[in-house]
Image 1 (cartoon, rainbow, N blue to C red):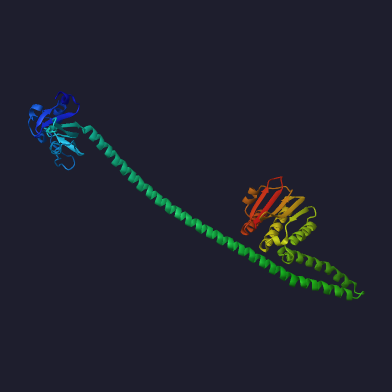
Image 2 (spheres, one colour; image 1 turned 90 degrees about the vertical axis):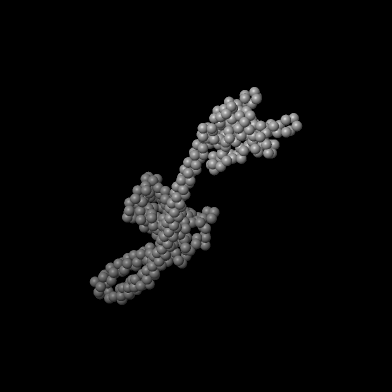
Length: 386
């Protein structure tokens, strides 16, 4: 009894019939019964336990120990109803008291008040439930946000697809427009050659024939005919110039390399102060037919810009095949310019020319760059993958 009385937990000892024989002070405090009040009473009267949630009686651990002869513990959520009716959450275990022969003499119950622990567990569970609710709410919010973002992303992707399709359509239309323009240039050039050029040539021939047949006595008529011939020749030369600017026949007949050489000769005769150096490191058959017109138009536009704006004295034309690409470079030693300022001047001749060159190169699958600064000349680079 002294040992049981000194245990820090609550202790109740019964006899073999389940009647209370001993209670320590801790047990008296937990149950609300004194030893004198509880002595010889059935233990279930003093140790009245139920399930906290179901409110049903819990199996008597003393009866279970007497029946099985083994240690028994309480189920979870067990509460003790004190003498005064208050409930105390407890945790306990019961063990048999046996003599030297193994006969059960009684049962000892050891239990403790776990109300504070149970309250802490409830608080913890409440926090967990609140946290779970917050997590669920936040998860739901994130799911909604994710759905909105997905919808926005899908919409953006659809817009991007539509923009790409629109861009491809515009590129196709631009390409077709340029091709139609080249065809029209070729047609107009041919008509000028066949009609106006032929008419002027025939007119000159007839005037020269009439002049040879004119009477020496009619000096006034002879002088008039002689004055007409230079005018007709000038018209023939101007017609030929317009025809070649529209679409030089040499481009279709002999190819781009011959056309570059012809263009440089014609350009040099007009702008004699500009020296042109050619570096051609490519064969005619290595330039695709679809690129020949593009190269010529870039050359034509760039050289016109040089004549009008650069005040250059030297120009380098370089065209070559490097690895798996065709590179076309036009470099001058002129006064240069700020490309950003030029591009910002909407409608200027040079600005439109630069845009036209870029569009032609990029629409044909190439890349285009221009490098220039005031006082440092200009370099135009165009390249096309093979």
